[in-house]
Each structure stands twice: as structure tokens, then as C-alpha cells.
Image 1: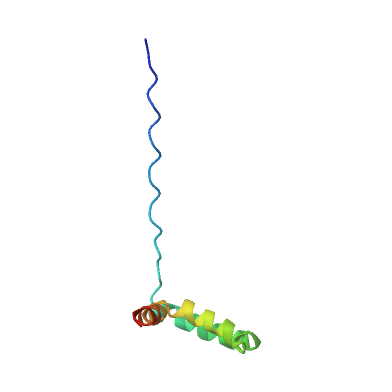
Image 2 (image 1 turned 60 degrees about the vertical axis):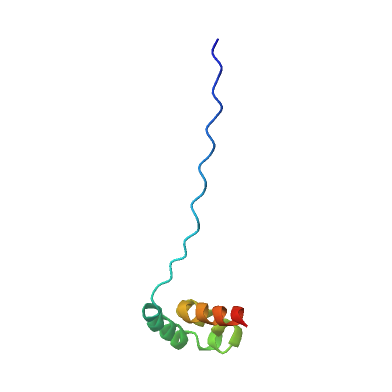
Length: 69
């Protein structure tokens, strides 16, 4: 009598990896964006998002400081 084996469990998904480019790589791109889109950078919320993308390490440091208080 052949008894079928239970299917193997699915492998666990790999943890998400965040890769942040060095801040110096995105700085020139942010400057070029500022020059090409002056109306968009006048909005402080939009500018804040661009700064967070261009300076991920600084943003992470602020989050760590805020969590510590």
C-alpha cells in the first residue's frame, strides 16, 4: 500500500531588505530636480519627501532620536 507523503511546507519568505544609496549619490539629483521643478519644491511637504529620499541616513537618525524620547 502506497501512502502519499505530505507536501513539503513552503519556504519562508526572505526578509525585506532596504538598500539606501549613499547620500552623496542623490544630492546632485535633488539639486537638478530643484532647478527643473521650482514650483514643486515650493511645497514644503513635497520638499520634505524629496529630502528624505535624498538623505536616508539623516532621516533614520532623526527617527532614532524621536524614538528615544
